[in-house]
Image (cartoon, rainbow, N blue to C red; front, top):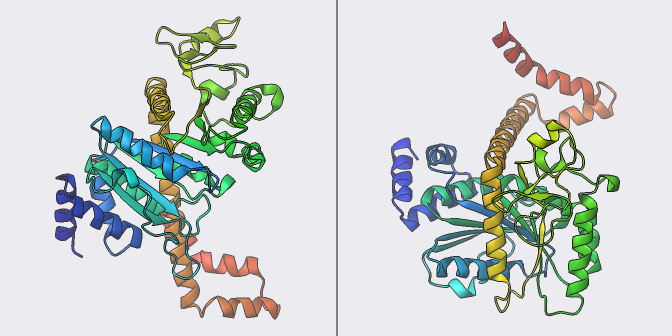
Length: 383
């Protein structure tokens, strides 16, 4: 595929042609020749959509919730793109579930673009292709982009790198889910949704989540993660405790004139300088996705969080962090490819392994030897 053809495809995508969007995402997912040029061309047209990641254990109702969210946005006149990341097939590397029928409320609606993609076995369940597909949807002009992850638990942390807002689904009375949250995924959630709230134990699950969030924000619990920005977990230690974004109680913070939480603190002028900066404490919401109950509250909370990101500057900071990580990931991928080619040029990894087993060399020496040409090349550029 030459550059002119790629440019034509991008132009048709930017003009709102759904077939062009589907073709671009297919090329991104299959990583066919020229896909990087496509992504480069659409990059300048991204940054307008809000991106929400939906994660949680299998069976929590993620797909149903995504379906109802998409319908809600469509009823408001907004356009929606959905990327559903499925488990990888161990045989083909493709999505195990494929293009399953799970967007029942939006069948036939051309303004809801749905694509199921394979996780390609990567930790975090989100492949590089998923992030690039989000860019394609953003450049196309979708107002809302929803990423539904595999739901593999703690490995879902990669969704943070792609989404502006992360929603973690939990089903009532699931001790395993709560333990999973304690194990780490609690740290990535901006909004926690107790779905299937008509089931027994929903109130208890909500209470457990709220308690864990409170403990997480308590320095004495030693669970701070830094995920929610310097304002939330910065050197001020107690700043941002119990801050509430215009909803519920504000146990420790103070509200600013916009109703956002501020980093409440008694005392010195340095702390006062941070008072105006809003912070976000994760919200816990109950929904019954099958009936749509609670979806309006969830959408309102997602909007509140996006407003918080914009006003606090964290939206820009997230974009910067995503760009940094993407650059590093691409470099790692490309360097790995160069090294694999170098290994093959020298006879293949089996020859090296045999030499190590026969004590003719050792793994460290092999690594140094294979890396040497790349190191010399880079050092020559520094001279």
